[in-house]
Length: 166
Image (cartoon, rainbow, N blue to C red; front, side, top):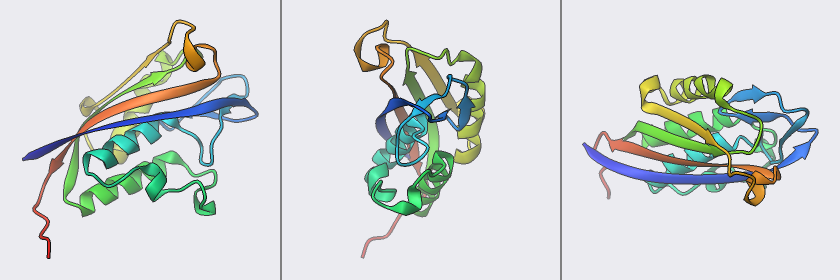
C-alpha cells in the first residue's frame, strides 16, 4: 500500500447564543458555542483538512466554501462523510486519525468516547483507528483566554487502487 500523511488545523471564535458541537457531539457550555458559517465543529473541520491534505485535494474551504449558502449551518459530520466519499472516489481509504482539541473549558473528557465513535462511524473505520484528545493551554493564548477553540488532526490514508491519468 501507498501511505500518505495529512495535517489539519482549525479554529473558531466562541460566542454566546451558539451551540457547542465537537466531533458531532452537542456539549453543554452555558449557551456559548463556536461561531462559523456551518456548525463550526473545529474538530471535524481539522479532520477533514487532514484527510483532504493527505490526498492533495485541497482543503475544506475549497470543497465547502463559507460563501455558499448551501453550507450555512451545515452539519460537519455530513461534510466529513462527503470528504470520505471524495477520498474513496480518488482511490484512498482512511488508515487512522489522531486529533487534539485545544480548549480551556469546558472539560471534554466525558465526551471523547462519543466523538471517537462518531468519527469512526462516518469514516467507516474501526474505533481503534481514531484518537481524540483534549488539552488546555494553561490560560495562555486565545484558547486559554476562552476566546476560541482550536483543533489539530493528523492522519494516514492508503492508496487502494491506481488512478490512470490520460
